Image 1 (tube, rainbow, N blue to C red):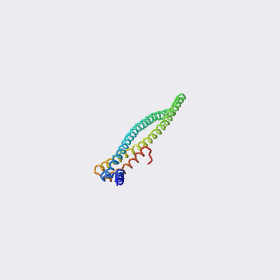
Image 2 (tube, one colour):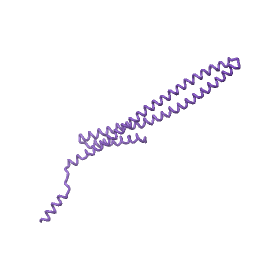
Image 3 (cartoon, rainbow, N blue to C red):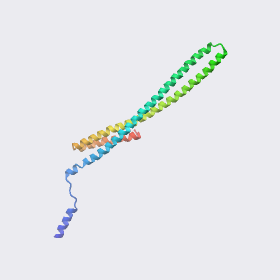
Image 4 (cartoon, rainbow, N blue to C red):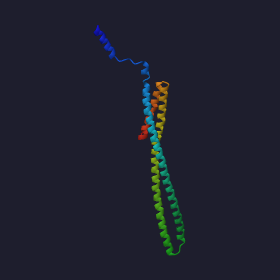
Length: 194
């Protein structure tokens, strides 16, 4: 009999204790805390990267405006040379002396070279400005994705937190859905897949 009681006592000690249902029921709140923390970190990273791309857009806009200002400056100078060229062409028609005609022809040749130079420089400036526009559009695309990620991650954090407060796991699950979509936009901010 003593062996039976010792073996029964040993079985009771080795058997795991049953946890109360309330402890198991509330265990999901630990997952809420973990996922909310991960979502908050991702939202912070997205916010930081989005701000960086916003700064890049502003800098690219400034560089683009500089190129277009230079383009405008070259256009004005080219126009001044074209006006002088037109005036000299009229004077060449009225000139009688061969020396005057030769001097006017030499000046017209120099003016045409300047006009051609400005036309070439304007083309280079236009190409540079349009290249910056493409770069700027790329920055805006990345930054926009990070902005959407921040918004969706914040909604996910809010839903998860409220779900934990009012003890509604379904709100946490809905928050996780928003979080997954936010994480997709965050990844798209880095890689620009869509």
